[in-house]
Length: 64
Image (cartoon, rainbow, N blue to C red; front, side):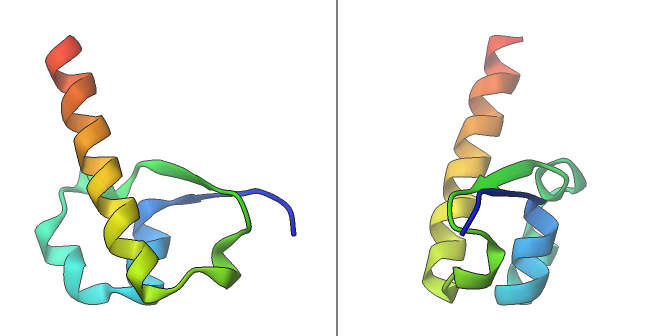
């Protein structure tokens, strides 16, 4: 399978829609590169992706 780039919102909507209200529109708009594509993601992967995305977003905000 090839790498796939998707928005975090697509991952959340598909596997963990209950997280959506807790994420900002900026976070949901983040582009995520998935090594094996969206089709093979497990619900448990979503929390890890969300945590990394938020942490990276906070680092970027602090650097600016």
